[in-house]
Length: 250
Image (cartoon, rainbow, N blue to C red; front, side, top):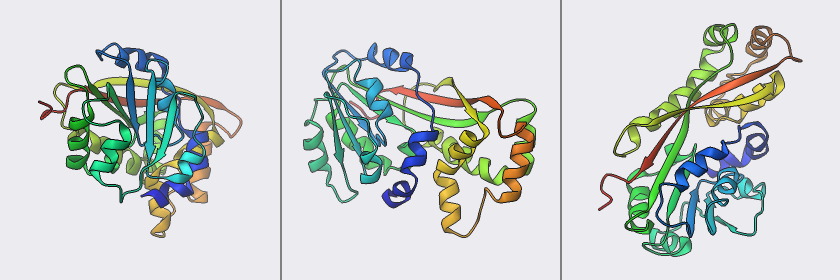
């Protein structure tokens, strides 16, 4: 997994949308204290930078050293490489110990985790009472009524692979309550749109298996449907967020 993200770290930094600041304000309002947060799978640190506006310190971790090389520094964010070999006890100690974390955030990453193990760690480190975990992920994305139908026919493999992976998180997360559905807009050129597609792990995994989901033919069809390479469009990322306590929290 880490090797997969090492290869696409620069693309990921450039192509992915910025999470709205109001999301972090909303999450901060749910926690009793604002001393320590843990951003899991932080990547380049964009979620950690939003969280740190509301918490005294953020521990930001990732299995990919290459991703962390592109992380944006902040005096109250501590970035740590956490290889898959790290033990649960080592990770709990690294984060701050049991009953120490006010907010855990996982932005577009939870589908990679051993969820029973992850929830066990979250249950141990969250402050009781008052600790909250929040997970969010893209379900799909939309561009325009003109572009989306063509995308669904000419490049269905490239985009449906991404959307299926993201949607699977909905059934894997063991939270009480219903997910909050959110729209996340980002203005991009056609080249920016391609960088976004190429940053997805589903596309990179397919390439490793000898399948080019973004072949020259598909890219040309996408460009035509987009309206030309110079046109800037707004992509709407259809996102859901689950926030609260893990079911077996207490």
